[in-house]
Length: 89
Image 1 (cartoon, rainbow, N blue to C red):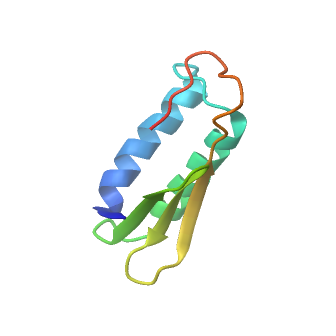
Image 2: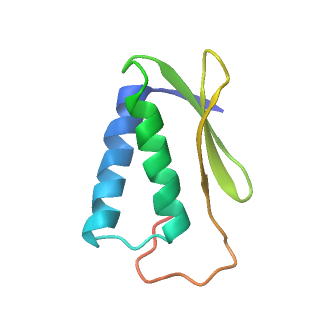
């Protein structure tokens, strides 16, 4: 697991959400929903707090590094067909 400051993740995932909503990228609806939950959760935290991210076989999880509380999960399905320009991290 890696630890990253809230503000750094917020900058990245706000941009990813903006790109998806504008049609620049085409992630699946479930990924977009997960990114929305992550952005909302990060916005509720202090910018200098740390977040732990973990890549699991079918999802990414984000937890408050201090408390261990789950902020959000972004689920993906490797077996599903891509919907054109789909982006994977």
